[in-house]
Image (spheres, rainbow, N blue to C red):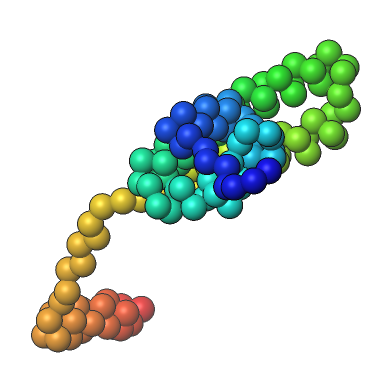
Length: 143
């Protein structure tokens, strides 16, 4: 093939991102004829913010596709089509990846946001509080 093949980024990015959102893998898509290489697509995400945004949304949406696949695995396991241990491994992998792709919905960690307010005490306030606590800790003459 003589010359450098030019790709229609505006036409291909929505197609690629749609397929990713449906659950496909970027590396697999980029190996197909007529698709840009994986490295070229990654270069597009660095060079064009709109491509990076579409790709990020597609990866988040892929987490929902993973959730649907988990439901399918469970149905297939109950139908006797797949071994329960194989099902567990597949579900664990899908859950882990979904948690990375869409942590707010599928992640294991609770993410707290907001401002933390710290009340700082003066040295005099600390001394007074310490004295009060020590006084409470002293045995009384009744004991």
